[in-house]
Length: 71
Image 1 (cartoon, helix red, strand yellow):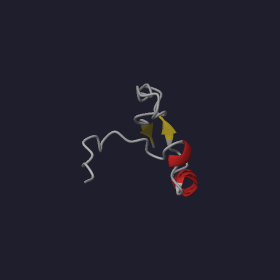
Image 2 (tube, helix red, strand yellow):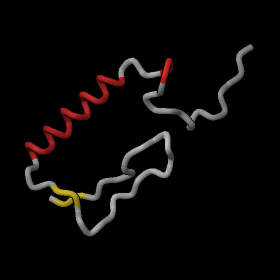
Image 3 (cartoon, rainbow, N blue to C red):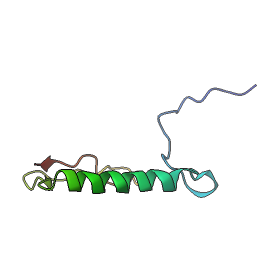
């Protein structure tokens, strides 16, 4: 009998190695399109220099936690 996972909140998002998500390329493409459209529709949108960009403390999940912006 298969055990239920107790660590469901601990995942690798798009994965790595043989567990790499088959939709990772699509997710990146959608993100790129969304950011480009946002820049076109809100040309005055800029990162807010008054606030630091907090990064995630986890090595597996790189990138900013939030992006404070002004418009």
